[in-house]
Image 1 (tube, helix red, strand yellow):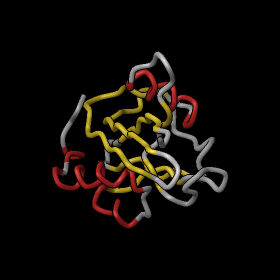
Image 2 (spheres, rainbow, N blue to C red; image 1 turned 180 degrees about the vertical axis):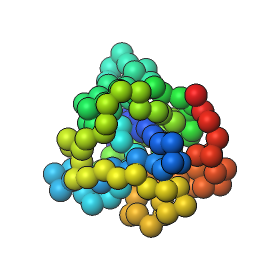
Image 3 (cartoon, helix red, strand yellow; image 1 turned 45 degrees about the vertical axis):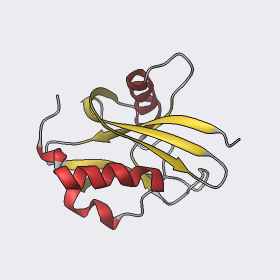
Image 4 (cartoon, rainbow, N blue to C red; image 1 turned 60 degrees about the vertical axis):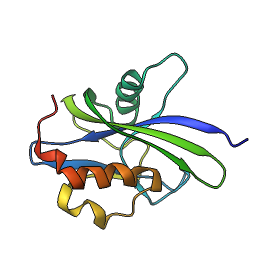
Length: 138
């Protein structure tokens, strides 16, 4: 049976309606693909706790987790990933890429110009469909 990992991703939107995108580094699987920042849910954590911890570790800033966006199950060649995404807002600090190759703020309308990890695409589809970055989720 294929191993499944439970991961969470943060759709962090700034005041200019730009979304924070993170480029996976050479040392990561799916290197050179963009993703929403986040990571694995540890045993005993709920999704929101995991997201707050992961963003603190990866981007060195504090977030407030908002509304649930979607849940996606994607089968890669050797692993199944269950990705749950949430809106989030930075409440303290400025994001710094510590694990990713780089991070950048991208206007929602330009988000498809990046090469995204397959598991993240359903979230992008939903964001573009509903233009949900134009709403306030906190």
